Length: 414
Image: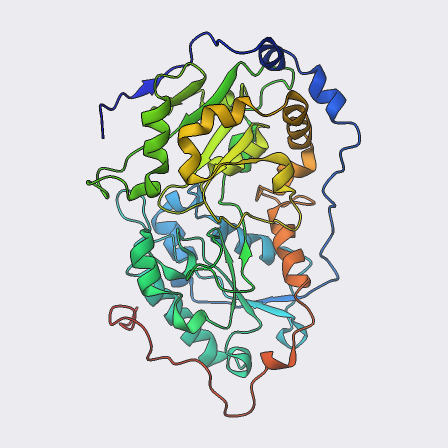
């Protein structure tokens, strides 16, 4: 693997004058902003009604009370979606008028001492919650979940495992095959992404990220920025499997490149540093998504997405091709050439689009909710699926799902 240094701090840059001027001045961004359209902030109220099942607190509130880390980790969307719906005008107390049904089960909130979801328990918890709603309400049984949605923010969503090979082997939990899944994981033609799923950003605390905003005229004096693992020696001691080798390639090729400020260290100025960078690397890890994508968009740092076939969040609302740079995993060794070859006017336009408040809003789940935020994007995505087709409702006595299907571990009681 070669010698691993912990940091490659940016040194004075030997870059073309046009690029240096791009770092130092923001007037070009303001000029490029002319004609930029805002993301349309559609209000989903009146477009759909959602019934929220009332589950025993062991499925949600008790788990948070046991471990408050759930409230701030990147899987917390499941918690805040529940809280949003409880106070939303979209919620209905009459299930007979509901378009969609939501089951508030926090499958990522039962954490190990290291802060990772207990993947062996998650599918059992989900199965238990679905058995509960199917026993006490008639609505699941009439569709077997086809008019229900679930938030599954695991690394590989409803496959409930953090390593891809094992997640693929497991597949999507069988009892969720007819439901609509709201998930952070998205990759084309993948066993853990079913048709009709809604891909969302990972949770990043809005109040925390906004507390670190710097003045917009702050010069962007860092060309490329990244903080995070390049190798995961604990789970991938042989190397090459973690991030499909893309992160290792970034380190080995650019650890001594003065244009790249890359390190495993996570400084207290991490958020401020991203706002001083032109490009922020967003490579895959165990899964193709990460909170860096949210941070890059909110902080106006052009995301460099290194994750082949990724399905990005809210792609029907966010013009990803216009605000980001996509680099194939195999092309990482040419990353410096790729980024320095981008015309200045293209960079300025991307920065101008990232500067739009509506662009940042879509990536966050603030408390309380705000117009155009991630909650509203999810509700609009659900509204676009209406009205339900005839195939949603089963005939009397008809069964599609097999409750005995699954791994031996998943079939154990929770």
